[in-house]
Each structure stands twice: as structure tokens, then as C-alpha cells.
Length: 116
Image (cartoon, rainbow, N blue to C red; front, top):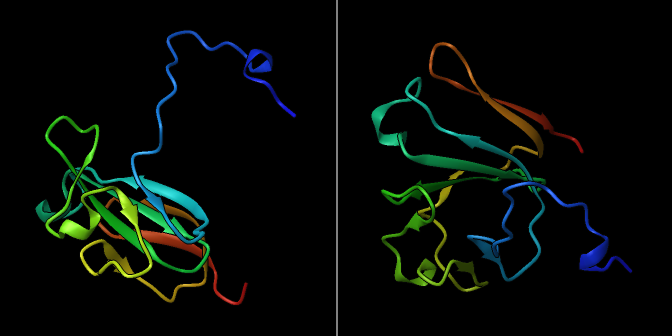
């Protein structure tokens, strides 16, 4: 068992709880912060991929320290089994995603183990 006192000390580090979680297990595998190479509608967006082949699209708030949701189901920052996730699902069915990058031309490249 690892105790907090055994953790390495990192300068200027402060722990915070996750900004979003899923009630049922999801295995996040990659994260991509949008930049100006992507279309304007994706600015201030964080893309999170999982090993189920889904890419989620989270809109950042103006302080860039939390998310903005139109759907009140997501306002608690937890994806419950009965919540409508259509607002945050960007793509699905891609296999186990291991990485994402933005190309110089504004496309998102996705590395996936399509057949797992």
C-alpha cells in the first residue's frame, strides 16, 4: 500500500480531484488540447479518447479550469449510465485509441488498435 508520505515531492504541485468522471469504468488513454490549427468551433476544447474507441469533446470554461455543458445531466461532472452523452461524444467505434495529434493542416490524427 502506498501512503501519501511515500509519494515523491514535486515543487509547486497541488493535488485536485478529477474534473470529470464516469460512473461506469472508462479507460481514458489520450488527451488533446485544441489549438488554432483546428476550426474555431473546436477552440477551447479538450479531446479525451478511451480504449472503447470513443473520443469525447469537452468545452473549457473561460478560466480553462473546468467544463461547460449545455446538458444539465452533465453539470455534476459525472457521466452516469442514464445520462445523454451526445453533447460530448465526438467520435466512436475507433478501437482502443492510444494517441491523438493535430496535423499542420488542422486534422486530428488518431492512433488506434482497431482490432485490439
